[in-house]
Image (cartoon, rainbow, N blue to C red; front, side):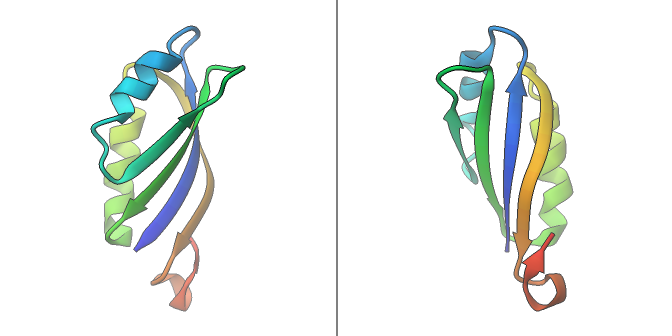
Length: 83
C-alpha cells in the first residue's frame, strides 16, 4: 500500500471544476483552499505499481494546471518508508 499527498493547482478560477473532477477518485480525498486555486489531495493505492496510473489519471484532469507530490509512503519500499 502507498499513501501519497499532493498539491493540485487548478487553472485560474477553476478550483470548483477541479474538485468535481476529483470526486470519482474513490481512493482520493481532496480539500479545497478557501483563498487560492489549490487543493490538498490525499491518495491511497493498493500497490506501488498503481502509483504511475494514479499520477497519469490526476495529470489529465482538465481543470488541473499543475500537480506537486508533497509526500509519499509505501509499506513495501525498503520495508516501509518514503516513496
